[in-house]
Image (cartoon, rainbow, N blue to C red; front, side, top):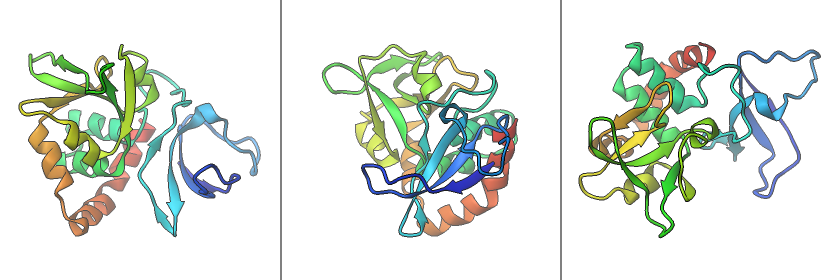
Length: 199
């Protein structure tokens, strides 16, 4: 599922990446590079450490049931009763995602199906295509929490296979997890995310 490649440095000077591939793609030769549409996303490797997961905007899922990214995969696992909230917390901390913005530079707020005001998050490009928004901003969990007004939750991937509303306090507690707990949980739950990506 994941492998390392060494493309030319980009504008950030990053030379090494760990790729997450669509499980439906298989190389025809040992040295064949994957097409951009088969790459779910990547982790940049900086100073020997993996950075935050970046979803690939050019990724085309093999079918409509394929997870678009790691957070989407974790949400699917939990919705099927195959994972717990800690798994979502770890993926929230490890991912970058897109927040829908109004033209005035403030987050777009909409009502969830249970009538709760929410900012709108797309975890990958396929989810963005379903959402009408004047603008988008790529953020991490800390930046997302800073954008949350009082009594506003977060609605992930509206219209998607696993659209879900997460309570703002849940996101704040995810941000406040200590690094030791995060590393322990991530190590324990990585196999589950791999299974979700293969489903």
